[in-house]
Length: 305
Image (cartoon, rainbow, N blue to C red):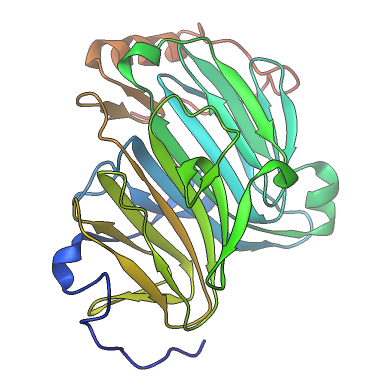
C-alpha cells in the first residue's frame, strides 16, 4: 500500500483536529470461533446515532474443511445489518428465513420482541475453502418500535442505489445521503454508506446528521492532521464540516444519524431501553422460551455469564 505524504491540514473541511471528536481503534474479538475486529461499543464512545454495535469481520481465509459456524443465538429490541465485501454466509432465523448472504447485498433483520438466528457457511463452501470479509452492525430501535414484530428483509446487491461523485463510488446501504434514498425501511433517521475512494480523491461527509463517523475498511484517509488507516473509526464533532482525502486507495464506511431517544442497556446479544427487559430475555433464553431456528435446531450459543 502506497500512502501519499501528509497534506496541508488547513484543507477544506478539516481545518483542525476539532473536526474529530473521538478516535476508536477496533479490538480483536472471538465470535463463536471466528475472529472479528470490534469497534462499537467502545470505552470512548458507545453509539453513533442509532448504531450501537460495529464488527469488522475478516478478511479471513478458511482452508478446505473449515468455515464460519455461528450457532443459533437470540436478539431483542435491535436490528442486525450484514454486508459482505467477499465470501458467503447462510442466514437462518426463527421466522423460517433461509438466505445466502453475498457481496453487495443488505440483510436487515429486525429483532423487535425477539428473534433467533444462525450464521453459517454452506457445506459446499466449507468443502472447497473460502474467504470472508464484511461488516455487521446493530442498530438500537426507537422506543416506540422496540417490541415490534420480528422480520427479515434481503435487499439484493442490484437494488442498492449508487453513484459516482468526484471519482468516489458511493453505495447507499441505508437511509438518505448524497442525493440517494435506500430501499431499506430503517425506522429512524440515519445514513450508512460504502465509499470506494481512489488515491487522491476527496469526499465530504454528510452534514445534515448530528452524529457521524467514518470507518476505514482498507487503505488510508486523512482528515486534517489525522491519518486513519485500516481498523480505525473517526467520530466527528457535531456541526463540523468534514472532508476526507484518500492517501491510498481506500474503502470507507460512513454512518450516523439522529441521537437515539434515551439511554440503551446492552448485555450479550440483547439491547433495550429497559434493563428489566434484558433480564427477562436472559431468563427466557436460559429456559428455552425463545423460538427455534427451523433447520438449525440442535445447537445454540449458551447465555454469556
